[in-house]
Length: 149
Image 1 (cartoon, rainbow, N blue to C red):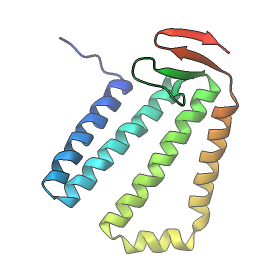
Image 2: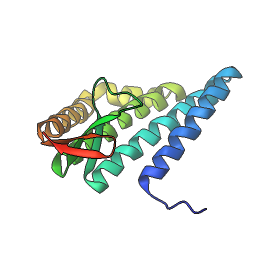
Image 3: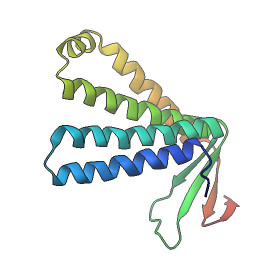
């Protein structure tokens, strides 16, 4: 059995291993390894966003979907890139804050505290990318069947 390398597979592996590690370390009451495992989960989500950018295809789950009949909006092209950028920036901001907080990195807190424009700009780019992603046309997919709106 061979597994082909792809960003999607890497994202699933990171998400799965990080999640299992977080559950295990939580049960063992090991706080730092649990936080690192949650960081690996977030990294898996970021790789998923990067996959959306590279493939120019984003499948976003619709509200009220279920396991028997999963339903997705499928964005292609520029809107998919917008969704990917949104996910990568959101995860990057959360991971950055988590690492700075967990490490007790006082100089980084001071640096960003004196320069709030850096974080404000990144959040602005993230919100703009989210708007670009939402503004695009999407097809509707239920299971393996895709339909246009």
